Image (cartoon, rainbow, N blue to C red):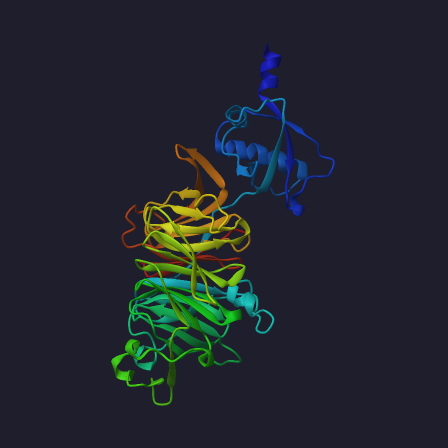
Length: 477
């Protein structure tokens, strides 16, 4: 009887990994392990210790384990019971490096709320587009921030402002900035409550010359706040999401853009002018949209280019709808209706999914393909307030970062799930609080709401918030 109990509390596992640098020796066969280890940390520690022992690692590496593509979050005994699997079965376990919570690297203080942030590095989107013609030097990363004080700022990794955008009288925004993106290492886009999208020429510090940022094009057409932007440098296109219920499509080239609609120009330049004098020797071109896409019934919160086809765009709105657009023809292709207002959007191209942050505090994963049999693929739960920003892991397939009005960023792996009454839901790996309040959570998020999160492979997770700070959290090395 004792022998039967010992056998029943053991199972043979075949350990595998897709990461060549941590692969076990080729001849490693199934291993007999205990199934009744208790406590998540202990289970992980015991299985990780087994792998580290076989690999003969001098410095132990923490591992996570997957069964059929989902993280193992119970004992092996419970897993076998729940899935009706015999202990005589050889269980295949895939191991991966465990995600380790990032540490606080720096915070950049501002004079007002920080609405937006972006990263320029050799591996960022803008840096990748320009890698052949204008590569970023390692260790020369830059952070862009947009603030409610109407200014753009460029920061180096030493927490110093290298340059700030001009004030309103010299061609800058006349009210709060809501979005800012690097188009390339020499061009920036921004938008705000002044209803404009602006393109800036940027020059970094070089040969003892100071950095500079100056107005290049002012884009008019929206009739309400412009709250989000997406850029695609190879096609010279910008998408804008506006509170006027429309998605704007713009060109970053003066020669390609139509004349600005007179009805949208400020009163002082509305008399047919094509350029606005902003200083004694500086003038800025005014241009209009290539198209304003109309179909949403409420403010548009986000618009993005399809990851693998820049002629396709997606938009999310407070009207609960996700819409697909064909940009060359300005045609609405598809509408997916959900149960809640959609406040943010990010593409997960390797999974053919879109992640949408909602007013209901969760993240909805949507399959936008016409062939999809259901709208919602999965729901991610954990935030305590609206989810207003999302960023996909730049180095992986399953990772996602989210920013919320609850004052936290959360990091998710879509393989980390739990079972609830309504089915399988995603659970976050960890939460990042605001260092301005010692990382302590605030359910309401008062004073520490996160407005944007971006994720850079070589910089880390950068977030902007109501605490007037850009915060950088970087993976431990």
